[in-house]
Length: 214
Image 1 (cartoon, rainbow, N blue to C red):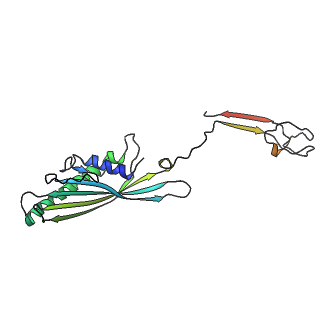
Image 2 (cartoon, helix red, strand yellow; image 1 turned 45 degrees about the vertical axis):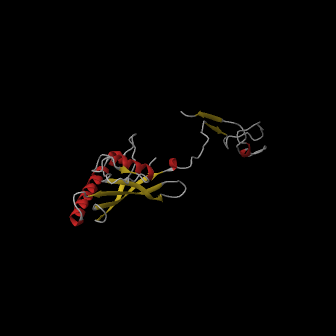
Image 3 (cartoon, rainbow, N blue to C red; image 1 turned 135 degrees about the vertical axis):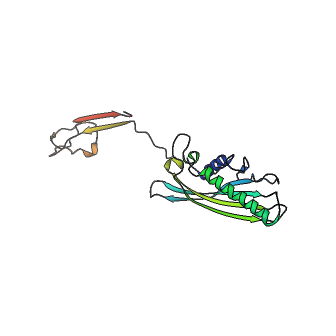
C-alpha cells in the first residue's frame, strides 16, 4: 500500500548519500541544531488530497505533497559574497535532489515489482539566502506533488463468506404432471398447486452441483 508517510520515509532513504548533505537527511522532529551539521535536508509530508474515482467503491487518486527543506551555509566569508556561496551550494543540492528522486525505480516500484506511484505531478522550488548571524546561509524549499492510487484493499476490510458450491435445479413449465404432488421440491414457492395446467410441478427434472474452487 502506498501512503504519504511511506513516501516521505522513502524520500529520506533515497536522498541519504545522494547529495552533499550525506547522511544528514531527516524527518520531522529530527532537525539538528549543531553548527557543523550543514548542509542538511528535512523531508516531511504535510498535505494529502484524495480524489474519488466514482461512487460505491472506495477508489482514489491520491495527491501527496512531499516537502523538502535543504539548508546550506558558507564558512568562507560573510556578507554578499558568503551568501552567494551558500546560494550556489543550495542550487547544487536542488539538482542533486531532483537527480536522486525523479525517475528513480526505488520511488516508482515496490520490491515486489508493483507500481508504487503514477507520476510526479509537480515540483515547486524556492531559494532564499540570509547573511544574518555568524555564517551566511541559504535555504531551498521544494514541494513535490506525487500521485498514486488507493483502492478497496487499502481501507476497511469487508468480511465475505466464501462461495463453496453452486447448485442448479431444473423444473420445467412444460412437460408437467397435472395432478401429482411431490415432497420437498427445490423451490416450493414456484410450484403450481395441483390440479395444474402448467408447470413447474415440483419435480427435480435436472440437477447440477458444482463444488468450488474448480
